[in-house]
Image 1: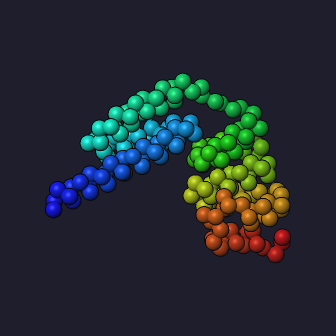
Image 2 (image 1 turned 135 degrees about the vertical axis):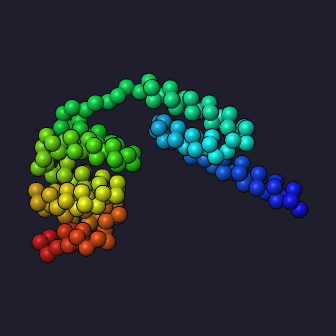
Image 3 (image 1 turned 180 degrees about the vertical axis):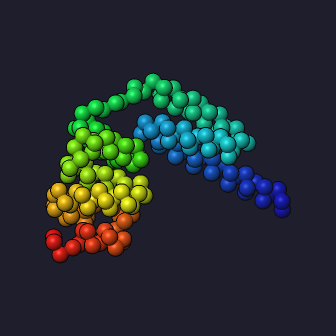
Length: 174
């Protein structure tokens, strides 16, 4: 009886290792080498007995390292480049990194409605509710149209139920 239980346990571990490898390959396919490497590192640490998967994981981990090393560091400088690169990162789900570029863009044009709105959206996604609400308030002050846009923008789902968000976006001033 214990032999059967051990086989089921081994099958489950193998299945978990394969699932992790699949997630890593999806990230690798999207050229998100950092995320792929992170998943592969976890797989390697958690499944040291899965030799077949482990061998492939180590190979792809090395490929991720090489891809990251070869990738030229993009350093946008103009306001437009900072804003566009921030949007690019936001769309990839890299909210903390996107915030960095939005903050740099806001230093150049602190009252630009687009950068303020983008700051709010990225901060909401990153879990920084205070910054999200402050930036959205500023964006609405500059452009009241941002109020209507925020009502249906899924980027604000994490804060949609907050009283301050509701008051800000659904106020009588719309």
